[in-house]
Structure formats: structure tokens, C-alpha cells
Image 1 (cartoon, rainbow, N blue to C red):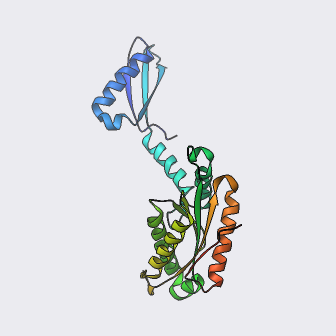
Image 2 (image 1 turned 90 degrees about the vertical axis):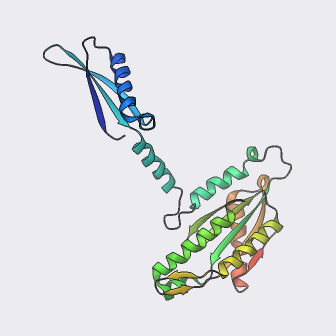
Image 3 (image 1 turned 120 degrees about the horizontal axis):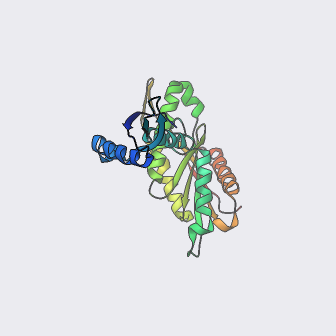
Amino acid sequence: MPRTVWRIIITYICGSTACALVIANIIAYLVLGRASYADLWPQASLITFLTGTLTGMVFFIHLRPYFLASYEQHLASQRDFLTGIDNRSRFYARMSTSMAPSTHRGKNTQTGVIIAIDIDYFKAINDNFGHSGGDAVLIAVAHGLRDHSRATGFVARFGGDEFMMALPDHNMQDGIAIAEHMRDAIANMAIETRRGTACVTASFGVVPYRCEECQVDDVLHRADTALYDAKANGRNCVVWRVGQ
């Protein structure tokens, strides 16, 4: 916790800590205003001087920097450092929550779709446009995927040029249509880099899941298998697998 930002010293004879706190809080409220005062946490202590006078010292610890730092640290642990979207651990946590029975209480079906995405020939992109160009491509694709999934699901970068998207409460037809739409959007991107404009494509693997029948790792493995098939089929395409 941060040290005291500022303090109010009140001298009083009665030695009442409660009295000191009340007076100090009134002064802090009047000086700082309501908004800033709400971020303060008062602590009182008593000090006895050689003269025998009791002095109440009220420290006001400013909590906003502490909570902001904690919140930012929490966000950093859940975000991909480059693209700003969810990372793998955050994706797992959100998937576990979305697949929990309590999330679907009152529904007869508990289904969803996972889409695995991989940028085609990413090594060649790094070779041609440099690592900064590769980063620009990753950021552009990540933000595009996030925008497409914002209203219906969530997406995460799993590492390198691979992403995973979850669409809870969607059927297979929805997943395929969304994947095709994203594939087309990425293929039409013109991403500016220091070495020119990069045009990229991506491959997609789509699989359905039923919450009561599978674990997160099982679904992701099937999505990866479908993605592998998409890359084997020439890339820049959508492949789906219905069975196990």
C-alpha cells in the first residue's frame, strides 16, 4: 500500500482519537471536495510530547493509486501484451464460466461454437515486412476478430499467429457464417507497415460443443484439428468438423 500522500495534524487535549478523526474528515471533505475525499482512508494515532500534550495525528492514505495499480496489474495478467485482447489463461477462464451449468440454467440446450484462427504464411510476413510489420499484422487481425466477436462471444491470442474465438449459445451454421465473414474481412485488409502495405489471409477451423459433454481442452483440440485441415486444404478457407 502506498505511503501517506498528505496529512492533517490536529492538536487536542482530550486525547480522543474519534474526535480527531471526525474533525480531520470534515476538513478533508471541505478542502478536497466530495470526489477526491471518497478516495481517502483516514488513520489516527496518538503522540505524547515531552510537555505532556497529547497530539492526534490523522494520516490520509490516498487509495486510488493503489487500486488503479492493482486493477492494471490484474488486467495485464489477462491480456495479451501485444494486441491487448484476452490471452490464453483468460480464454480458459471465460470458457469454463460459459460452459458451467449455472450459466445456462433454464435452457434445454447448452451449445456453442469454437473457431480456431491462424494467419497464413506468417513467417513470410515477418521476412518481408520485418518484425514490426508482423506485429502490425497481428494487432490488426486481433482487433478485427475482437470487433467481430464483441457482441456474440470472445476471442484470445493463444500465441504466435494463432487465435481462438468462442461463440457461446450459437449453433454450427452461425459459427460457419461468422468464420466466413471474418475470413473475407481479413482477406480485404490493407495493413500499413514501415516496409509497405501487407495483405494477409487466414485459415479457420470451426467445431461445435455441448457444455455437458466435453472439457475445454477437448473442444480446443478438435478446433485445432479442423484448423489443420483448413491449412492442408490450401489456406484462406473455413473447415468445420461436427463429430469427435
